[in-house]
Amino acid sequence: MLKLVYYELRKHFLTPVMLLILLLVLIADGCKIYSVYQEASLFSGSNLEEFKEAYEELYPVYSGEITLEKINSLLEIYRPIYETVQNQTASTRVDENSYTYNVYSDELFFRKCFLEELEYDYTYRSYAAGIVSEAKKNMDFYQERGNTYEYRRSLYIGKAFHGREIRDFYNTEMYQSLFYYDFSSVLLLMLTVYGCASVFVKEEETEMKYIIRTSRNGRGRVYLAKLFSALLFFVAMGILFAVWDFCMFALFFGGTEGTASPLYAIKGFKDTLLNLSMGQGYLALSIYKITGLCVLCMIFILFSLCARRILAALMLNLISVMVCVTAYDHIYNSSRLWNPVSLLCARTLILRPDFSNLAGYPVPQSITAAGVAVFLLIGLAVAGWLLWKVR
Image (cartoon, rainbow, N blue to C red; front, side, top):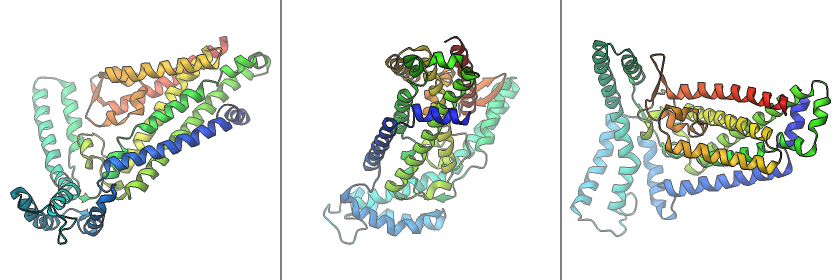
């Protein structure tokens, strides 16, 4: 069986053409990440060397544990600069006494690099406490009215946000871009469209299917070997791109200090139900992406079973991708969870406290989506086996 899987890998995926495409796709992904860095980072421009120097000098002082002493020290520097800018009494020329190159750039530097992030981190505790307080009020309200589901939902939210705080200040610029980066998902999707098209069609075109039918135990083993080889290859591709993206972002943005910080330290994730670190959050999103890729792989394999030519299978794969993407863009209710694209863009599953009502119990949609994915994988595998038997 292992030999069959190996031969299927070599025949369909470990070909010179596929490996060349993979190399080009990785290079394109790296170039795209660099362009994201150029657009998103405050320190990407060549004319911002002063920002880099000032940041490298001040960041070690104010990073780490958030204390009132650090905040007051920073405000003592910032307030006179802010007042000068507000009064519009400073020159726009280069000032040798400034931290960057003049007082206006100093105000932008301290506000964007330190104060806005520190303010968010410091006040998040009260923000989370407010959500817990509101959840308790809702629990009392719905308990009086006998609404068990809403009571349980409020209880779940209260528990998720209870005791939350951001104790440390670190640069989260890298993760803010990494979590919103979807270009690698598009590249993986195109690889899957191309790679899965020939999995079963090749036997149809070469008439090898007649030999397989007459071989002992050939039909069942060949089907499983093709299935396992496709899933194994694209799981490996998902892992490769997850590691590649992380390394490229770390290289360009220059550090991963915030890896152990809570996921909600990123402003866009302030309402997430997950109490994970940023590193754990990225791992979770990568697993969701790989799972979605496997579901799409199974769909494309079904088309490969139905088609008689590789071109026809490719067209069916592309059409299904367009249908899934269009449906994802226009459907916003719980039926969206049946769309594998929602797993490729799993960020939307954890940004907000969204639930599915399962027998009166609130289940976070991130968990529901995982259950739906497992169901789809099993169902598609069984459907493929039935098609393979009558092919």
